[in-house]
Image (cartoon, rainbow, N blue to C red; front, side, top):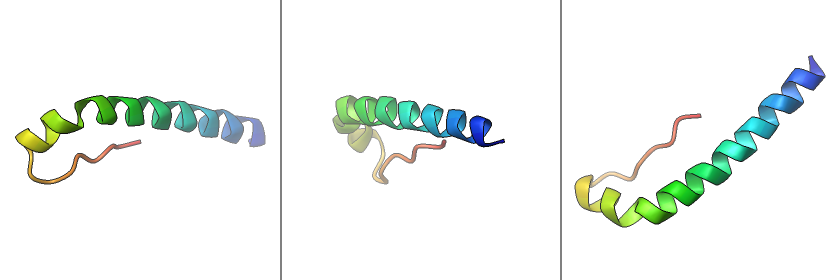
Length: 42
């Protein structure tokens, strides 16, 4: 169970990094299209 948990945490970290890069590069387009900030679902 601990090994599975570690793998999930690693995937979350990878997803967080990718999400930050994605939202950072598209933040201007998103704010123009939506008044509310984008929410990232993990």
